[in-house]
Structure formats: C-alpha cells, structure tokens
Amino acid sequence: MQQQGGSSLPTNEEKADENNGGPQSPHAGKSARELIAIIDQQDRQLSNLHTHIHKANVIRSSLEQAADIADLGHAIWDDQLDRDIYVSDVMAKILGMDVATYLEKISSLEAYALLVVEEDREAYLTYESQVEHQSAHSDSFVEYRVRIPNGQIRHLKQQTRLLPTEEGIGPQYLIVMQDLTKARQAEEGLRKGQEALSNSVALLRLSAKIANIGHAIWNYDLNTYSEVSEEWAGIFGYEQSEFLNKFATFEADLELVDPADRQRYLDYYNSEEDFDIEYKIVRRDGEIRHVYQLYHYDAANPSQAFITLQDITERKRTEANLIQSSKMITLGEMAAGMAHELNQPLNAINIAAENISQQAARGRADVPDHILKKIDRIKEQVFRASSITDQMRIFGREAKEKSYAFDLKDAVNNVVELMEPQLKLDEIKILVEPIANQIMIWGHQIRLEQVLLNLVSNANFAIKSGGKMQKMLSIAVSQESESWVTLSVSDTGAGIPEAALKRIFEPFYTTKDVGVGTGLGLSVSFGIVHDMGGNMIAENTPQGARISVELPIIKA
Image (cartoon, rainbow, N blue to C red; front, top):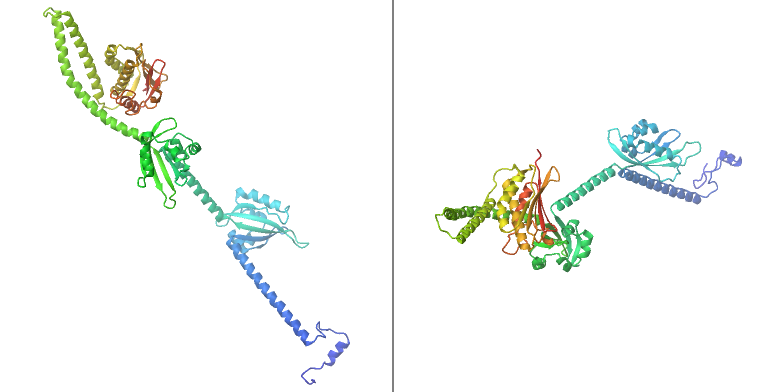
C-alpha cells in the first residue's frame, strides 16, 4: 500500500531488519538534498579522473613518439629471472626485431651479449657487472656496437638504473637505450669531410709554395694588413709574425718595393682600374726579386682586398735566357761569318810578310833590320788576330749533335792552346795543373770549351784591370769522389764584389764598366753547365777570385 504523494512505506521485512540491526546504507539518515550533493561530487571526481587519464595517455603517446624520433628505447630487466620482462617497441626496433621476437630470442644476458660486436663485448659485459654495485641515481653509461639480424652495425648508448621493488621480488633495472648510428655516421662523414678539407688546404699550400705564391688581406680602413700567409712573408724573407709587426703601415710596406718601381707601384695602389702589376721587391737580405701582384675586391666588403703575390724571378730569368739564347745565336752566326771573312786578308798579310822575311833571309832583298823587326811584329799581330777569329769560330759553332762522352783533358788543352798566346802578350803567367788520368764527361766538348774560354777571358780581364804586380792565372782539376770532378779557374785580380757574388750568373749582370761587358758570358756558361748536369760556384780567394765548374763523371 502506498502513501499519499507516491512515497512507499517500509515493508515488514525492512522494519524487521532495522529493528534487528541489519545492513545499513552509508548514506542512511541523509536527506535527499545531501544525497544529490554527494552524487554530484562523485560525478565531478570521476570527470576529473577521466581528464587526468586522458592527459596521461596524451603524455605517454607524446613520450613514445619522442622516444621513437630520438631512437630511444627502454626495457625492464629482472635479475632474478635473468631476462627482460618488458621491452618497448622502439628498443626492439633498434635491435632489428619486434617485441615478441626479441623476448623469445634474447632470453638471457649471454644471448644479448652475442649481438654485441666482439671488439666491444668485454667493455659491455664489464659495465653490466658494475651496474649492481651502483646507486639508483648513477649517471654512468656505456657505448657499444651491435650487429642486428640483417647484418647491419648499429651504435648504441645504454644507461641502466636500479628500480625500487617490493619485498620478495628480485632486483629489477630500467634499461634506456639510444640508437646513435645516424649521429656516428654523421660524425664520420664530418670527420672525413674535415680530413678532405685539411688535405685540400695542405695541397693548396704546397701548390702555393711550389709556385711561389703568397696571399694577404689588406684593410683600407686601417691602412694595414689583416692577414698574410707564411708564403707571402717568405717571399720577402721574413717570418709571418715578424712581417706583420714590421710592416704594419702602407708607408713601411712601400719600403719593400724596389726604389726604381716605387712611383709606379704608388700609381697602381691609388688606381681604381688596375688590378695587377709586375714590379721588383727588395728582400730582407738585399736581393732583388721580381713579383706579380693581383688584387681581388669583395663587393660585400669593400673595405678590404684579397691580394695574391707570386715570385716570378725564375720565370724572368727563363725569359731573359731565351732572349739571351736568341742573341747568342745571332752573335754566333755573325762571329762565324766575320771570322771567315777576316781570315782571308789575314792569310794574305801573313803570306806577304813571310815572303819578305824569306827573301831577306836568302839575300835576295836588301831589307834593313828595323824593317825586319816590324815585319816580325806584323806576323805576331796576324797570329794574334787569327787566334781571335778562332775564338769567334768557337762561339759561333753550334753543337747540333747529340751528347757524347769526351775527355775533360782534351777540352782543357784546346782552350789553353788557344788562349796561351794572348796571355803571354798580356804578360800573364798561366799555370795548368797536369791531368794524369782520363776523366770522361757526358755532353758537348765544344760547349764546355766555350765555358772554359769565357772563364779564362774573364780572368784575363780581371788580372789586367786589377793593378796587382803578380799576374797569374791557374787552371786546376780536382776529383774529390768517383762521381764528380771540379774544374776551376783562379786569378790574381781584384776579386768579385761581395754584393755581386749572388747575382754573378744572372743574365745581363756584369761587374765591368758600361760598354765593356754584356753580362751574358757567365749566364750562358751557367746554362751550358746546368744542361750537362753540373753546377757553377763563384767565390773570392786571398789572391783574387775563383770560379769552379762541378761536373758529373761517367763511370766506366
């Protein structure tokens, strides 16, 4: 039976339970309003719990994605079971398996250690054995390589930490593993790139050194060098740091330019059109060198210029040698022609003078004694002129044949025989040390005679202009080894000026007065000796000067 208003009356059983102390509702005795408030509170708590669960799932998903992106896997290792009890998808993927396959195959520490490459295995096992002695907060890690089932090598970084567990459960460890393979491959690629760059720089520097090229950066705002290379400083004869300190301004730098080219260099420096120039510099030791300079302006940084400088002295010498060779060919042809033409009247004069002498000796002609003396003088001068034409023939004769072996003694004897009359006329004593043994040289005898003839002629001139009482010229041959022989010509002249010793073999350089020497003789001689594989050395002696020719000997 229901009461009015729809409320149900308690049954007899419910009353009996209430009277007998039976089960009571936790909300018994609460009003409906209170019950509704409790229900609303529980709904809110349930809603908050769902929100937290959702956030936790989002965070977990984000962490899993981040771990996948960073190739960061993890697992839980149970020491009592001697195996992993949990492995993340990323960790299994790093090792080239899925989770189920990993848990099946990697059933122990020994099984996992077989994946580690042999060279890294000992270090890995040592780390694992030390983990149980470390605290839960240890930051130690190990890097090693594994070979995954498809044969690829992967670089891994692993950190293991002790996990807190309930009593009765064996020690468990959290293993965090990161795949460093891409990073290591990138590092290796970077290392190889840096090595290739370093090699390229080294090759460029070597090429610059071989080509005598230096570089510098000039700052127009500061009016000084920002940088110079070692090769740049070396061209001027300085160390890199020393050059920067000594030539910190344009005015100081200008002192390096040869005075003869200084104004031209200033015009070039102030010009906005000229980017290259050839000029001469004065090295630290006073030597004059030829250089080629090129400016490169950077439009992005107009306050500075990149400059390259090349020492072209050897190129200039080669060019001079080519010009010199051309001149020598022309001079040789002219000398040969003149010698041929002069010999004819000389022979006629000599025959006429000899006939007069013979007629007078036979009594067929009445010739006064003073006339006979003059006739003898004429014959002597004819002989001297003939010697000069023979000398011209030697200079004009071209050795077209291939190199051959010849005895050094023959070349020396030929030159002595040619020059001895002239030296006697100049009252110069010639001393030739005897050459006992045969010394075979490879080259052209005629050209070596040309060299020796030039040295003897220079020595003759030095003695005559030296003003000394003792007038002596000596030719010596010495053999200090089985491979080399030295032929030297010494004189008692005034010697070679110290400043000229370094330049004595340069083309067109001469110590003689203007109009007397061309500066070609020693340069040509040097080229001839160099072609024969030898060398020439000029030096002063207490008596005068000595020029030596070093030549390789043909071994029997």
